[in-house]
Image 1 (cartoon, rainbow, N blue to C red):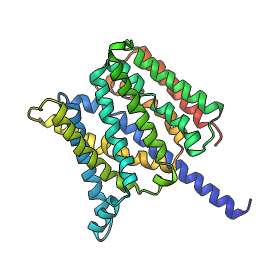
Image 2 (cartoon, rainbow, N blue to C red; image 1 turned 90 degrees about the vertical axis):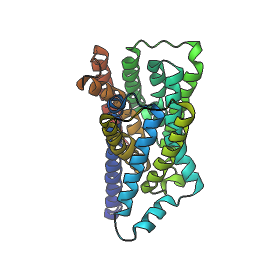
Image 3 (spheres, one colour; image 1 turned 180 degrees about the vertical axis):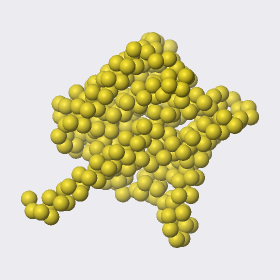
Length: 305
């Protein structure tokens, strides 16, 4: 290998590491989704989603416009994407949340969350046939440990699958499939060329669809108080704003296999945050789950590329 080729390879590895770190930032922000959603109660879920998506999208477009001269052209360039990109982006963001909230309405929340959190495993497994990335025993063992940790955490809430909630279970699995497909397809040749700035448009379109769905399926909300507006603002800035841009970078230029494995840390970290803010109880299951997820992440990270 020549010096030039070696430098190019090292540069590619550095880019991959940085992008994977960005994806990890999204996972950290998503850990705050549950505490902030609790803070926003009793706002209906789809209304909260629409407001947070709308705020996140508008802030992102503002940042795009402020990056240099000709702000209108910059915004139009971010929004002027092929139909396939819009279908991919909006189906991923809105489709995931719509099916997830439907699952919570039609099935017990513990079971719905357990099925929904099969998306990290799906991301890892889809990375091989879709992106041509090798898996290997260490990565599979790592994702297995992570899945076991998440399952232990959620089963600790008394998971029991009942046939009467089959539609809710289907919606939960559907949300997992949509998010895994959205994530992995972001790294394909057709979608990888779509700039991350376009996510702002996907957020705004998802906001509009969420508000329409709220008007159609949820009861009208009462006056929104200061605490709820604070929660909406924080959600729009973080878990339902910046997180989607960081995840886009991670999926397009990072290691989706490692990010999929580390995805199991989100429900564990969320549980720990809920307990830390006094919004939930810390159990032995959470401690063991944290150890399993951490071990799985380290095992997957140690695997050769």
